[in-house]
Length: 593
Image 1 (cartoon, helix red, strand yellow):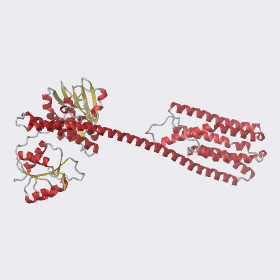
Image 2 (cartoon, rainbow, N blue to C red; image 1 turned 45 degrees about the vertical axis):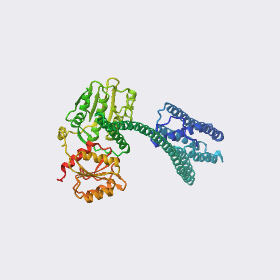
Image 3 (cartoon, helix red, strand yellow; image 1 turned 90 degrees about the horizontal axis):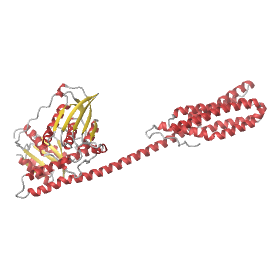
Image 4 (cartoon, rainbow, N blue to C red; image 1 turned 120 degrees about the horizontal axis):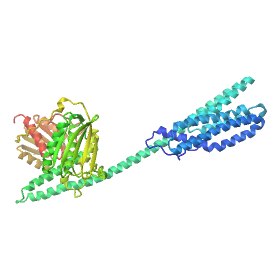
């Protein structure tokens, strides 16, 4: 049997496997019919020559007319199918039905030869005719094996007139019933074998397409993996460069600061370099957590107005120092389904980017309703982004107009982080920009009904008290980090005992029971882990108001959440103001010492 004709246009890669199998079956049917037509004409000519002379001109002519009509329909169907394939708009199921009807009619015309040629005057040629028709029935399994339905149409179309003739002959001569039953049994066996054969061929076609789909999927995954490796290489190369910049500046500032005549502004420059390095670490760790799927969102009904108000307050000083106007317009009824912490971070990234790229004019934050969504937009009158670069700005470490990698202009991680957070939350992030005229970033979020309590602005937070009094047990095996943190805590007014190992920490906690209000443990210790040490320290210091593990790793999935200040997991690098705020909150709640 000939394979399917592969000259037809292929279906799309995402086409259903069953549709692909049917396509190949139909192509195979029509290709086989086209190739076997000369053999069919030769067979029919031979039958007319062998049986027509004794049957007479009238019968032979009538049968030839019947066969010619069936063949003409077949030729017309072939041409119509070829034209449909050439046009590229053919429907496989439609042409499969056409094929079944055409095959059934042609087979019935061939089976009708029993009515025209099976006569006593044919002598032994009658049995030759019967054998030829039975052999043709068996051959239909191979000829139409591409499709079980076409094979059944051929067998039943051929058998129907033959069986009718056998029954009529049996009634006339009161014999032939056994022959008719044997013929029915023979056709039944052919139908069974033909079905098994067609099923096997269909399965092989399906396996071929599944294999092709698997190969295509493997190639796609391989390409994605290679692209990811290239992206990671570029990511780490850029990260390595940007990490060295503030670290190099810190090295020189520290050198100058060690001199007796060090200028007073050096300390401030050193703090700025440290802040830049910390911000870069935070951005890189944020990207890493997003890539690892360890950042979990907690979307809830969220009022936009107080959130925007907080973010604007954080950047008001920066806008004023650059001589820019910072305005916002958000209705109190704007309530969306989002994560407050992640959305505030996204808006902060967009606002920081807008202020950095704007030289004159200002920035406007607005929210407007469109259908069932709220659109939170950040407009700026900055330099704008060329159309060719509007996708690149969402790649890591891409900074347009900053080839010298000036850290004061950012590090190129704000927009990539925002895009990934938007994908995590299911928010649409769009960019519209005109070079020289500014840009607009839009976050599309699902609108939710307005709870009255959410429409109220958040009350302004009270500045914390300055004094710190209490005792801290600090555990860290890195001497420089331990000494620096201990010095910082003591300058804040706290009494700090430090240990380099878990054994030393347990000895101190056992010696000074009910003595410490704060327990701080590094995660990676030479004789254990902070997550295992902290519960043992708390058992010896149950009155401690603050207990935390400090680590550069993500917390384990089973890390217990025992309270707002108990079993905290603080990520490195830990900002001093963050730790100070936690300490003030904890010590304000601690019992009298």
